[in-house]
Image (spheres, rainbow, N blue to C red):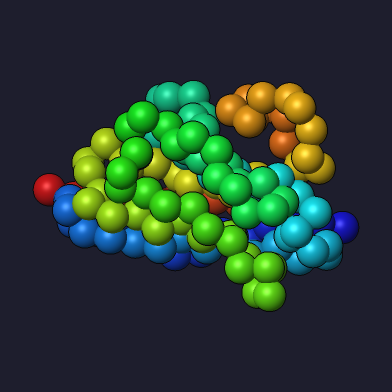
Length: 125
């Protein structure tokens, strides 16, 4: 059974950096398309960025372009989200998600059967 476990969240000042991790167990990460989503209080879950099984990233959400970077280490079966120049509006629970590669939309949460439990990112001014 595939399990995803996020880590790396926390409290950070605006302008700071964090690196989130998503450890995949039960199956090699290389067979999956993976993605980061986030959900702020009172808002819908939002697609941040994805990465294909060969390591190619999708387009980033406009709100994070130029600040966030997705990557994947197959040897560690882990996906990362490097967050730089963090802004107040980045406060959210961040989730990693995975699926068998398909042609369906990257940005729709219901297209992913595998989810982590989420890691909280809180940004202070």
